[in-house]
Length: 363
Image (spheres, rainbow, N blue to C red):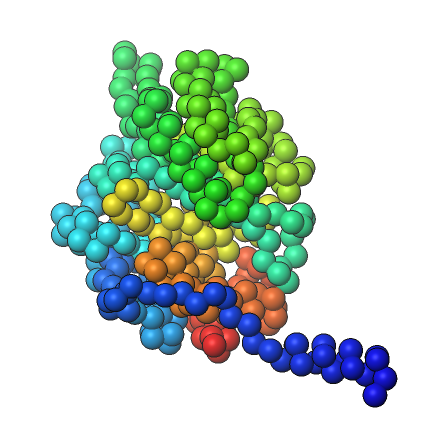
């Protein structure tokens, strides 16, 4: 047999060999079903959370949901919902609409503060088969979630003059910096970029930068740099591939994450979550569009991909890695195939059609 024939046979054999990662060895009892608090939320929320429920059932994932009806117009998250999250330690939620103006505070902010979900993480990356303006985008935005402009400390000094306080503390700045570098270290990321406006807000953002610099010294194997937030936005739309992990104060992180999501394929495909020492809440990564338009709800054409990928993050958080891999692989196959996409991704599919396609791709 010729050398070329042997090579072809070897390649064919290798292509048929199914590879597995190194065996995950669970602790005794790790396979017991876990309770997860589910908040469908407003707008498209019930559609996309139902999509997750269907896929979890099809996979026979070892979780079950405790579902609660919460709307953004409520004055507070009901006590029984908070009790459920504290008990289960994990929550999956759809978007909660925050009224613009008026005296109604954000339930999203309430959840973050009361559960001390100090870190928001949004992963913005190119999905194979989904055309975007830029390639090689794989950015993780880690945002401080409990202070800054979102502290909610506002008052009217005199009629026509409102004062809004931005609070930055060394404790919270160090905490989020440590989380960002720890994330980079554990996920083999090579660079952490701190986003700031310390050229103007010299004390507040200066303290944030000082904290990041101190933490960076403990991770010599990870490149650390800094960028002013306005230049950061320009660089994101020009050369997003230069960024890896980004750590930001609260408001900047919201803006940067939504910008990065738009560059990498849209808010409908970007997963995310909020985590603290004891609890985690998973939701669509970028806040823009997480409630959606009424017309999308009426036509049942909400994109469930972001929340499906967020639920894969949740499964890894719960120590169910093989279920997470199956779900993520199925979603990516549907996107790559291109036959079943919602309108925001250039298709005309309904939410249910995307769900059915994902279930069909499960292995």
